Length: 149
Image: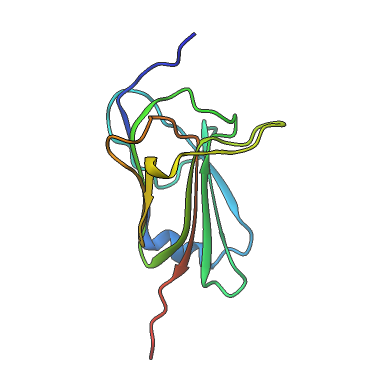
């Protein structure tokens, strides 16, 4: 059976508050959230309860770097995304990667082609016209902005 083709934009905002909250946590925490078809934009802050997607946020010992991973634990999403964007505030992205398939059982992550997405200092996002509507995982490593005295 073919996966439903929903016009589903996904907007994930990782706000400065999330970065500050991560600084107080020494171990990564995982939060589940739902993404549903319907052609509407979704924002995620944090939800409680079972979900089809998960987000893990962790910090380095010196609290200067954080890693955010957003993925579908079952490996491949049945949803077709028309767009996606994960954004950070209060930090600068040093590494970002998007995957069409997340590792599941004996299978490995399958990265999107480099022309399908772009990484800037503050976001990882689809490239209009090049993104093939398959997204199952995002990884972002960012360095916290340091204010000089």
